[in-house]
Each structure stands twice: as structure tokens, then as C-alpha cells.
Length: 109
Image (tube, rainbow, N blue to C red; front, side, top):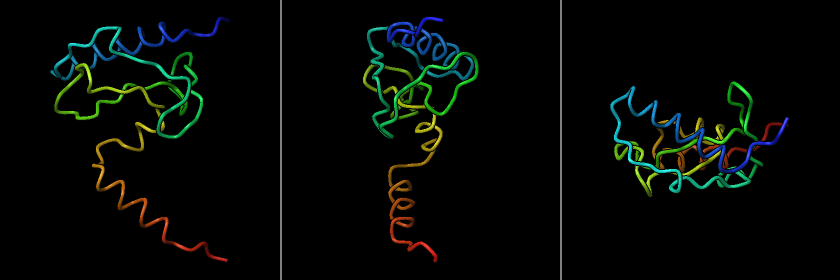
């Protein structure tokens, strides 16, 4: 089976984002050229691995930086499904508080 190309992954992400936008009444003006698919997740550093069928943790996922703006140029980035799932609807401040809390904990013997 052939490995998906960056362009084929971008096409799939564009198609699914159009579907979600229409279903949820979200603004969508993206074009294929607006979607850059990196080799690694820019958040977690793991290699992005497109899945056949259901998305896995390393599957590419299109994240809206500001969900209220919709799928528009400059408001989306491709990250891993895992990074996007961790973010969900948390704010940057909430994520920093979570990170600070777990960083200060000492492992139990």
C-alpha cells in the first residue's frame, strides 16, 4: 500500500473540514494551499502517520487556533490527533496551569 503524500493528506483534511463546517454552521474559506502538513507534530514532536480508517494518536488533525473564527486562512494548523484531543476546548491559560501543576509534583517513591 502506498504511503499517503502530504498533498493527499491535505486534501483529506480539507474535505473533512468542509463537512464539519457545513454540519456545524462554521465559517469555511480554506483552500488546499492554506493547509501545510508537516512530517512531525509541531506540539508533541511525534511523526505524523495518516491512518487508514479511524484516526490514531499520530494521525494529522486540523486544529482551529481560534474556534470562533472558523476554518479560515491563518487560523488552522496541522497537529497530531493526540495534541488536538489534549487541547480540546482548554484555553492557553488552563493548559499552562495544568502543566505547572504536574511539573511541581514530586514522584512518589
